Image (cartoon, rainbow, N blue to C red; front, side, top):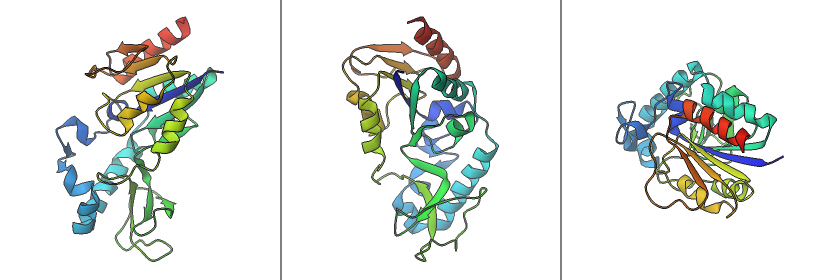
Length: 228
């Protein structure tokens, strides 16, 4: 069975009604990202950051996977699929995908402020000030903020080197280090890129562009992949 590695971004979640800061010039749901998505913001105003992510969780609880998520899950019948996602929601898992690597953390998890290895599931949508880890520190969202290392990059690179087919959905490859994953594919690996915006710059060989939003683009990808 061929190995299909998929990199997904904000565009696939947007069709389920979940916005990210990439939609509107550095604003995320009306907030400047420096106010809600940096370690400095957490140090300055943890209550605001906590409230912001509580709202994101509440919104994500009501979001449903769209056809792009569903089609990716269905491809597990024909391929060995690993999804590497820049998204922090759980829509891939809700759609039935079984191997999902979250580069930027997970919205429905919290972690210790002093030990990033201490990670807990968030039951429901609310994480409160005063909720502590087992070492007594305040729990924070288990999200990779701007200025923090991306610990899942190494596993993502390893998976990418194994790909027989590499698919990019819902990202115009502007966010690094994730955008650099494409450079780790084998020379023989065909690359498919589904996004309304064709990225600038040279992406290498074997690239097929599908200039569509995630849902219609995934339908076209499915046609292409089963034709070849």
